[in-house]
Length: 329
Image (cartoon, rainbow, N blue to C red; front, side, top):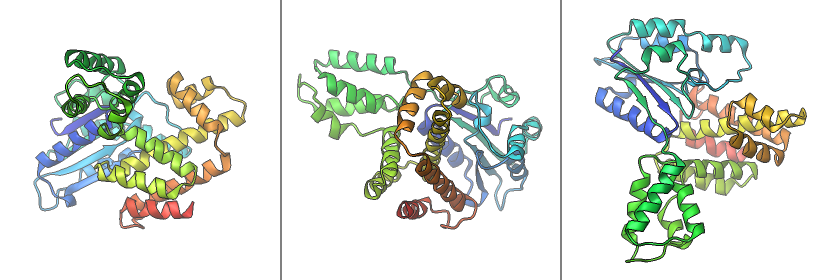
């Protein structure tokens, strides 16, 4: 199982970087790299590809993105056939027990808690190709900020500290670098204000994606495109941006349906498999959105996802597809 990797945890960027590292070290070309979004594909299709002989190369790489079926999160899949196929781990277990030497299989389960009772996870977890990428806790980051500012004799205003923590708390590896950058900018014993933080500490991916969703919901096409181009310029993968938006709009649509059925925050929490705090914010947001518009937006986003990844209508260019999606709104 030396050629089978399990990458999981809440740090999306770290998982992406680890995947890139594995691919770069494998020295394979694009013809021998297959990436499957497991919210759109079955395990059987992936395994068929894993058994494929490399083309003019010693190795090939097969990536299983968004393997939510390996997490504790409950999936809501409308197609019963697809649900059955995605939950059937038999072929994947058979492959893990008898893998192809020339295939490097990367299984990714980002943003969710891994299910240690899952038979696939049981086989791979604890091995030398098992990589966990948790986010640093908010308390740990806040404590670090307090300590480093105290030792460097800098005070910080309350609003500046809140913004600083908001922008660095989702970056478990990079937040120290952001603080070091801030300290290099400051004069001796200078007080840190919100006007200093804003231009120096950039928004996190989550903030920008949330802003992108708001721009889409409010039909602000120019702002949506500006945010999208900014995310792409930061080397965030277009497929991840699109999947994140689809996942969030799906949660909002489910939440809206629950509200229309006189459901509660607890019903939303249980259905989506999220925390009480997350359910509160999704409930608050869903109340402000029109059901029909929300449903249409999600339908159009899924069409974009299909046309980009399956039908190649846009030449597999998600950026062009997203521009056309916004023009239709």
